Length: 236
Image (cartoon, rainbow, N blue to C red; front, side, top):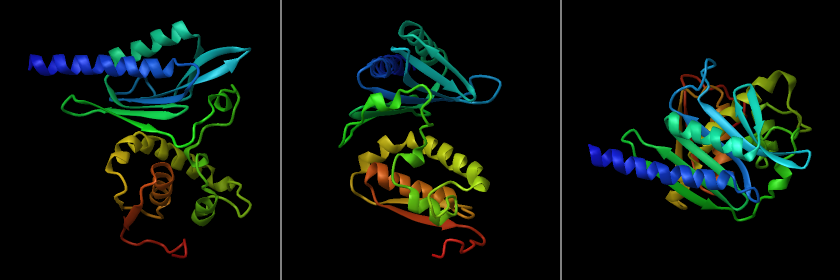
């Protein structure tokens, strides 16, 4: 038992160092999402999102948890991050930089699993650092216009229907959670992935997940939706 604990401690220290190095590499860091095994406060939110922001020519690190956010200078942000990673059990983490992504999770048996994936086209960190920039929605990371029209979330001109704003936010939040597994999926190479949704209803999340995974992993996704009665609202 002592050996297992020592192995996890060493592996986790190495993971914390890599996470920290990437998040505080000001030249390439874009964003990070860390999901913990237990909520971090009274609002039952287990996820913290981090990004670099430019305010008055200074680079600050923004921590977002639920509706709360704070912008911190480097030294303070390092203490905050280490405090979170050391005192709260982590479930998954995803760090995006200009040219690669870092994905990781802690298994139930206490193993630290980490994967790396390189980007075919480098991202420009400066384009994501405006303090009042638009929210980084996963549905905006690929060409989702046709998908949103078919699902009935967007109008023919591409604007989100007012009545579907809540659904649009729900789909994006689901894809953010799904995004933490993308690095693991890349390990299967070019083999098709079967995605099964039991109780899919109108399949907003199912079709969005298929489109997002295919766009971000270049893996073919075969979707199976199961429900007692699936309305043919998509004309499929």
